[in-house]
Image 1 (cartoon, one colour):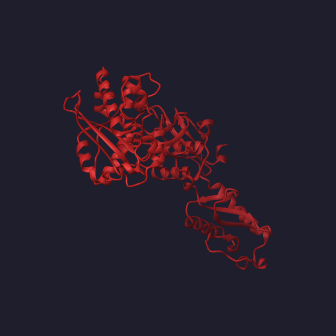
Image 2: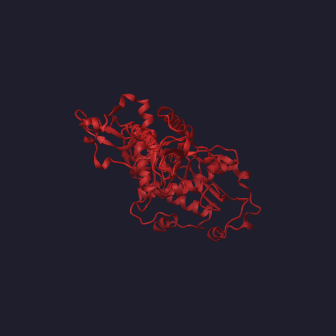
Image 3: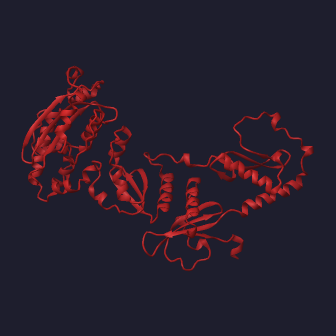
Length: 462
């Protein structure tokens, strides 16, 4: 251990378990030079907010005790100078660290520090214990705690534990942790081995809780870098803290390309709907071209908001795009305006929708015109394969876009000889298409036309 290193062993008491909506009520800092404690600091802090009764019972810190205590702003300068340039140590380090980053920032001090967690260090140096909570691990090693759940009592016990860790660190794990310091950025329940195995390639990653349940699915160009970014930053909200604390294991799947990662992520989210993923509903189409027959048997076309109970001929992202498409159909096929309805938010009265049928075309003739429209829409359904690199050298990724819908995507070896697209499609690769995935593919197809292999119409295969 480098003798020049100094450590700040810290314990805080707070009004609650997440930094965003709670304050510090007490802090103890013990400066350790690698051999012994060389400086001590402890104070109660007036949180300027209520202390819940459950917290009072746990810590023994009451509103009366902190009434005349300094606020954090009053002692921020002293705390900052004590912590600055030190290696920050605590039991479950991210809890104490997150509170202090937030409180110091609010007081005008931009502070960060390398961290060591005595929970993680204990698991590595003293493996095999059922529990590594401060109370239980101290009991295992007969370390006295003068005042449990008070800052100085817990900090002093953490120092004794740290001394024991230093003496038993035959593998140099503490020095290694200081050199890399990645592990101590990870959630408390996530083992470093889970992180080390992650590749630095494109793909998706899956966070699971202690029961193995998927709680988050993400995509990345560099999986390892993206996963680590989740554990950086100063977001101290309750939702984020719960998210981080829930992560116990990480799975991953490589994708070869960013587009495949996007599709894999979307498909898996729609299958599992993890609690910490935002819903994809905002990416669904909002407008559609629909067809129906009126009471006289005339075929009608209309632009409307998407309705899951109505079969749509085309989907659109914006009302302008939808109305323009219908306008072009009207011009190309000379459709009767009375049978075509553009979308407008304005409410029409029943009188506005009355039609004088005596002035309209003959039913059979107009039905023939509409059949030409339906044939045009059917025959202009695009079909193509988007071929790109795979996850390894002798592999390709493919995406099959069939009849204006994303049909399948996956990986295949050997594309030298194929004619029917279905020849390379595995049943496992078929997917549930949605508007968001389709739009992503079409944008990539427009950006990289050299990767698009246009397929003949089905009738041309024979």
